[in-house]
Image (tube, rainbow, N blue to C red; front, side):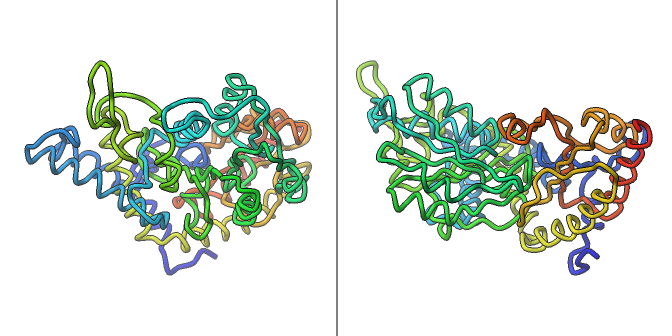
Amino acid sequence: MIDKRIDFDHLRQDFPILKSKNRNKPIIFFDSAASSQKPIQVLNAVNDFYQKDYANIHRGIYELSERASLLYENTREKVRQFIHAPHANEIVFVRGTTEAINLVAQCISKNESGEIKWQAGDEVILSEMEHHANIVPWYLLKKQLGIVLKIIPVTDEGVIDITSYQDLFSSRTKIVAISHASNALGTINSIKEMIKIAHQHQVPVLIDGAQAAPHFAIDVQALDCDFYVFSGHKMYAPTGVGVLYAKKIWLDNMPPYQGGGDMIETVSFTHITFAKAPHKFEAGTPDIAAVIGLSAAIDYLQQIGMQAIDQHEQQLLQQAEPALLSIPKLKIIGTAQPKVGVISFVIDGIHPHDIGTVLDHEGIAVRAGHHCAMPLMNRFGLSATVRASFGIYTNEQDIDALVEGVQQAVRIFS
């Protein structure tokens, strides 16, 4: 049973979209790993900002701009507290995880003046389970500079092979970039151990926390990671905002990612000086309203408590996995423990897209496909899986409906 100290069924009332219909049936949403639904508290915060406080930030000397700037910078401090970073100036606002990783890939390979310091043959370590957002930026760097991508294998259970990981380091290794939790398997990786190993080789580590930040508490100081990135839209905030945490030593020694307004100190046609981090990396007008929405989303999550959210998901997993495994020919892909609220599965003889279509006609939204993790699908000899991913609005009745819907798909296609 779900922990009654937090009434998660009552929390569902905070999500207006759950009152609408899908295929003329009540929505049962199992695609939170792609993007979570938004509570009314977040929607109201964005709406209130546009109606009461909107102005561009860091530029105006009038009160409205000052209010908007204060809300924006207060969010930076709130993010710092949320991930337990040492300093607010180590928090950079970006559009999402994807932009954050691209920023690091392009900037860490250069010195502060923007000159390329990496050479052909330098190495980046990734894992087989990475999302495309943590593959493509490094692949582009490979094409640009001739670097080498070294890949950590994943076991049949969906666990990173630590022994193989240790063997990948060399004097040419420049960075390790790995996911905290897999979007396709749910696996929570042993990143603290992996960071310790990398630091023994004096190699920095970037953690893709897109699938971790919505699910459990993050402490970047305890992890000792060099970079930590995540997206607002997966943690009940609007689209268009994400976070790059980076240790100050890296931000100070990386060049700007983009040029424009608000990231400079002085500009002439012959010489430009840049603002200090984090503003050096925030060119142009950001999605201010989305940042305000992120602030409200963090408040919302912390009022519930990240420990309670994690416990809620674990109890749902304990209900869902045995029930799904009781269905003939169903196989769960990714059986590692611990994991976040993600279940990927296949059924012998039925294409995942067909299962997804049957579920859709029952009002149940799941993801069927490669989940932006094609190398991982190839590792398991699959083109696609069905993925059911949980949010704080997922409840026991949703799990029952999912299982019943999958059973119906089996009856239709058997």
